[in-house]
Length: 213
Image (tube, rainbow, N blue to C red; front, side, top):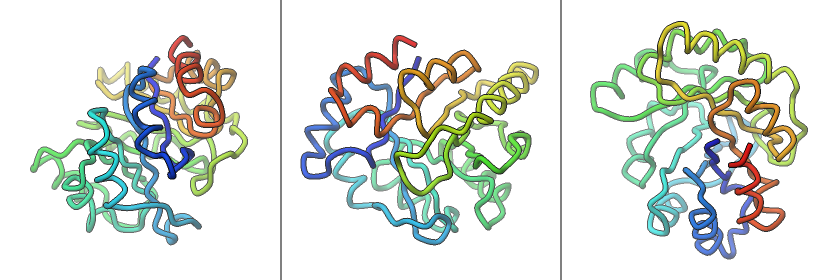
């Protein structure tokens, strides 16, 4: 199982130390929740924090762009050190046009669906996508309860990916701990995003427990 700790739940007062602990614990990437206060009702961090994280680790940085206009800003996030952009099908812009641009310039991307969005809405955009992220909470705030229907979405997405022989990895984000993570793994998840669970205890032990699922 691949694990991507959500940095938003870390202690920003000792951010570099916590990033290094994630790396030492065997995290496969770091999940960066970027929120603009419009697409979701919260504001988090942007380019400067990503630059700081990039300087602290060699792990893959996946920037989850919960913003209205990722088409206007994705290149700036890449310049700041992000490796892969995770883009919502619900963002109010032409996703197909943006993906065409990203494919042309060689930018890496993944697709995200919110809990209320049928997972099949993401299927037309999976060609070339490295990740399909299924949200198992409503985006905006950490510490929410896991949404059970997300497991059904994982199974549907897994079947589609296998049927069409895609190389897209299935990721799940929201309410993930050692219990819900195991259920997500059984439903087909390849990557677990976990914030509150990882950073509310011993980081090494928590990441290890997820990687064993």
